[in-house]
Structures are given as structure tokens and as C-alpha cells.
Image (cartoon, rainbow, N blue to C red; front, side, top):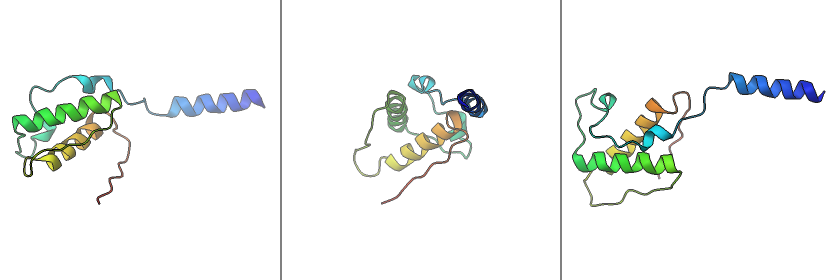
Length: 100
């Protein structure tokens, strides 16, 4: 019985998709990824810096808060981060984002 349970566990683990690789998110983006500019949009340099900071913080497992002056694009940075995370790392995972 114990061997059967162990074998079932191994089969489940082998069928799961690969665990997300966080290490490549530590690399600094010098320019915005191609998938972000597909609709013609372009991040400002300070927004790209914020995006890099979000990516690096997530790869380190650090909780973060974007805080700056109004109108500098925190929403765009957050959306770009989540889209990049989905596109590059968590391809088969659903996101649940709650707005308050």
C-alpha cells in the first residue's frame, strides 16, 4: 500500500508542469520586452525602472509597494509586471487580482 501511494505521488509530480523559474527575472531589462510594445505602447524610462524593481523583488520573494507621485504610471507598471509574469514564468497559472 505504501509503495502504491508513493508511486501515485511520483506520477502526479511528473505530470505537473515545471516549477516557475524566478532566476531570469533578476536580470535587468534594458529596454521593454517586445510583448509589451505589441500594441504600440512604450514605457517611460522611470516606468521601466519600476518594472525592473518589481521583477527583481518578486524573484527575491520580497513584498513591495509602488509609491510615487500621481500620474507616473503605477497602474501600467503593475499591469506590465503581471503580464510579464504570466508571459515569462507562470504560463499555465490563473491570476486572481482583487481591486479595492
